[in-house]
Image (cartoon, one colour):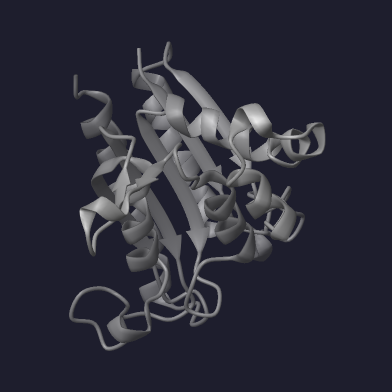
Length: 222
């Protein structure tokens, strides 16, 4: 049995009274999850919609608590880290991580950045040792797979695309993934949302198909 952690970051709901307001990234993620569950219905499934229920931003007191040894933390510090501890526990359990997110202002939504800031912790997700010289940070987790589902209003953000240099979403998440124990990375993308034309409809259809095929491929891996 494997565990799948599903994080949705869009501030939009998957379904709304006005279908034009439905989250595309969540729709594609649902396609992946439905296929996964149909093939691996006994797996553990952990879900968070951080778009609708955002994690708190970290602050000075949070940083102080993180760098205080656990056996020396005050009750207030332990309370400050309660959410972070819970998010880390969910991450640590996961073999597969599915993150769905729109591109906001060429990067990730604030709730998703807040999730990364809460979950990435010294001596939990990474170690820091100056004895390693100029590369003191090393991940402590390993063996995880990340499936990133993204949606964007424009197009050409992929390798060789005309807006590749403006893509601060997928590359950023892939960089952070190293310190979450990610060893296999897949990305499913839909584009052209703001144009609302046939290119957009085809892009969404292709992404839904990709989600279905990728879920089947990963679910069949031992």
